[in-house]
Amino acid sequence: MFGIGGRDVGIDLGTANTLVYIKGKGIVLNQPSVIAVDTFARRILAVGLEAKKMIGRVPKHIKVVRPLEDGVISNFEMTAEMLRVFISKALDKGSRLSNIRVVVGVPSGVTDVEKRAVEEVVRSMGAKDVYILDEPMAAAIGVGLPIDGPTGCMVADIGGGTSDIAIIALEGIVVSTSIRHAGDRLNEAIINYMRKNYELLIGEAMAEELKIEIGCAWIDPKEAKKGFREWEASGRDIVSGLPRTYTVTSRDIYDALQESIQLIVDGVKQTLENAPPAIAEDIVHMGIVLTGGGALIRGLDRLISDETGLSVIVAENALEAVAEGAGTCLSNIDKLERYASYYKK
Image 1 (cartoon, rainbow, N blue to C red):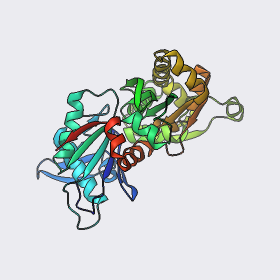
Image 2 (cartoon, rainbow, N blue to C red):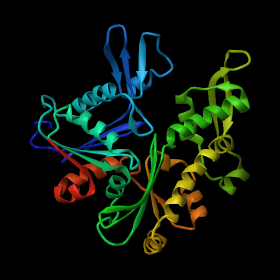
Image 3 (cartoon, rainbow, N blue to C red):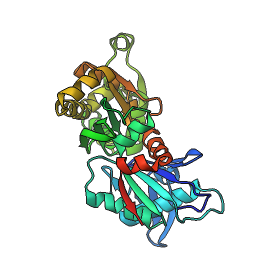
Image 4 (cartoon, rainbow, N blue to C red):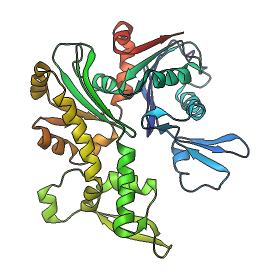
């Protein structure tokens, strides 16, 4: 696609973040999937991190858009514009968009129509061949799981819009569960909790900060004895309408996230319940690998382990696993065509 010496590209087109992997270079871009547009002048003002900083802070003529919702494209035009900017940033200076192969990671639960929408966006930028790869498959490849053999392995990719859980063997997904409930819904749960319990309206950015800094899915008894961690939450007081700051503890965020986290745990258990007996036996020995930003919530691995009785680990490259898997696939096109949905120009 890029007239850069035949380099191919892997893309993790995520609800929260988009990552671009260039063969031979690795991940060269990791930006929030956000675009800001001036509706009067009809021009793009910012994309990625700069656009995300504008959320909740813009005048009426500026629209800040997250063009992907629950892991799928909700705004085709804005997704295409956003990708064009990202890919231009990822390229060598002077490179152009033409005639390369692209692998795009998408949630395992998307329909063929939704896959075609992703393919059309990438194709509109000049791609020669487009491969649509299920995110749990890409994540498994990205963390180095043995997906080609008969032994089953299990990965749970918890992103911004979806949680994708899959058991993989012999180059294919044996059983999977895709839940459109992940990082964004956890942020919503924190916002609702703060409004209900402390009459404090907080923004999405503040909710995400609380989730990252003091969020937890499992209470460590030792921590509970020492005292919970604290963080300052700023927002608008519902009663007075004035700005206010409230000291929030990790116990608060645990309570806020409990119901939402349980939905993800139930997805893991549902996937295990649907696994063939022989594969289930493999998972007992292999355990579960967690990837995606949601995997980094403190104690989630311990909670899933307690609920399933299995070994659970968080991948070292949890945030980059899908992009790295998508990019790594390009080293073996024959295998890639077996792993992915393939669209040739």
